[in-house]
Length: 371
Image (cartoon, rainbow, N blue to C red; front, top):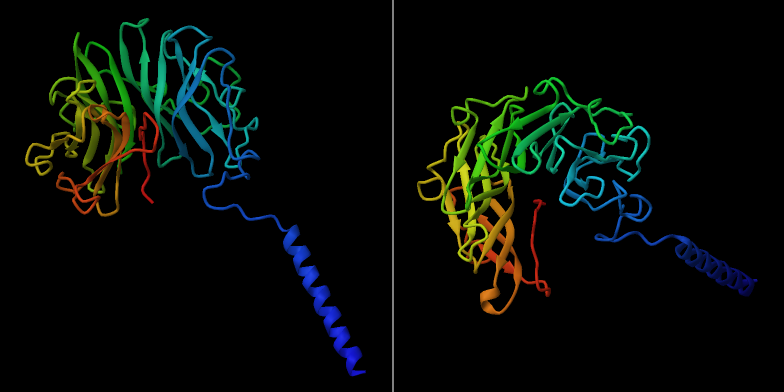
């Protein structure tokens, strides 16, 4: 009897072991960090052909309060060379495009404010859940690009037309949802936007100052779609730090001051990272960068700043590209960290800056997020 009991215990233990192994074998392996999220569009990614002719591009994305993904970008206008339309896409958190999500019957396609080239470069969600897009448009057939701020309601079931977002436009903003932010007489390109604590929209980019020179621009727009004249007296500011200066991204501090990042001597061998800070009144903040409100930083040969974010302690992190061609290499990803006073933070990588080679001939960091 004792032998039978022992035999039964062995058999039961063996059955339990095999059952456990079977359960383990039938349980799918959990996705590891860094794997594509297959709960999004089945395989973790989507390719969107917004127009049957020409190329499409996305410059920026934002996630609204319900987890929907909103984009800013462009699509080729009917295949015509150098002819783009302002693009907006919207998908659910699961990566689906349903009839309720469409902007125009195609999960998002282009609007042309002009007949030449319109590009949305940044998208934001304001405190009311409205979509705020920043970019530029050409109203005169290639002769005059202007900055544009476009605000829409988070409307569902928009009109099925590839040439208008008018059903969704927020008409409380500049009358028709579109504010043309003119800084000067020639070409202007806004590359960045941010919404401050008062709901005002800060925009930045660059304009053509003359036939051979570009200046950085920054401005602030009221929530109703008018220039905020409490900012630099007329809402806008044009700056020349050297030759060919550009702003590519901005971030707003908790005290309302604005940090703008870009390049001084853009396109020149001596090009350097440019970081400037502005007061809430729209003046260069003289407590930043040694007393003049801006700092220029050389990494290698020709350097460009493209993205900026602020850490919780106020330190400023910048990414871009550093050109090391003069050392027999190519372009490397650039990362730098500055203190709140506008000097390189030597607790970061010893000297505050990194040129990172990933093994390719050209590497560029366009944007970043802080964990």
